[in-house]
Length: 341
Image (cartoon, rainbow, N blue to C red; front, side, top):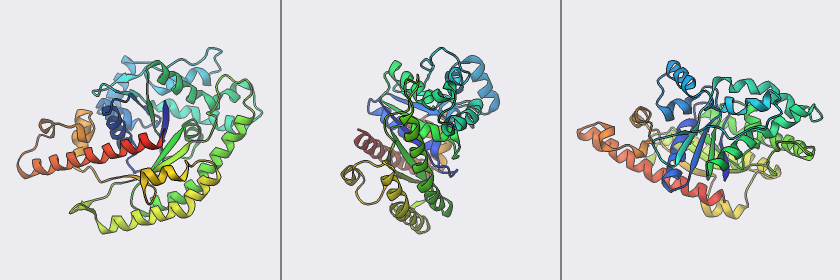
């Protein structure tokens, strides 16, 4: 089983959409995939379950009180002597794809995790917290025979995201072709190694703890360039310029810092899977397909012609776009399988 974080502290880069579609693509290959909504905003939960708003979300929690990340993990944060058990997950319309829904109260874990990551010699309850969420996901995956766990994380550099990322085996960084994603590469180049260093200190003092962090730091799988327009099969010029700048910035700053922190795979692995640069995928803007995807709780490329519900030239455009996204996410999923061995 592999745990893969989808993370960038810069918002608006389609993390939830990527998580859903990538998970679906892997599920279509026969892999059993669990999506975990770690963002207190619960966008992924709403997308997967076709929830229309807070009322729908409230109804879901009332009907399934234990089927969310907060309910599954709170035992550890309340100091209960009973060990965490596998979470109750939710089936989707794809038979191999499952969801551990999010909850707005997941953010309440933040203060305790912040103390636990800083106070290395703290009381035993706090010492156990850094490994608790990872243990929960491991147990949940084991019970449900999951092959891949994808974590959809919030746009934040807080302690919750710090803990989730160092609890994973791998991570993917989604970016948009704009100035702010460019700046985010600089910030990630400092933040991610610092998180890895802190996790190493915690591992060195873990002793006989109930919940432990993974034995090594998570490894970088690549960046996903998203939210751009395509004309005549090519990325339009303004977007391509920013994509090139971001890839170059990764090479200049992010990659050396990750290398020093032990957060990279062997160079040959990247050469074989990615070729030049550090993009594991390029995903254009979904435009009108996204609304259809959310309406039917299906990946954009899994929508049927009937679900597209269009006619004439518009229908042909939508069908061609859907088919192109199927190729994109098929290739994306194959690269994930190749790199996350």
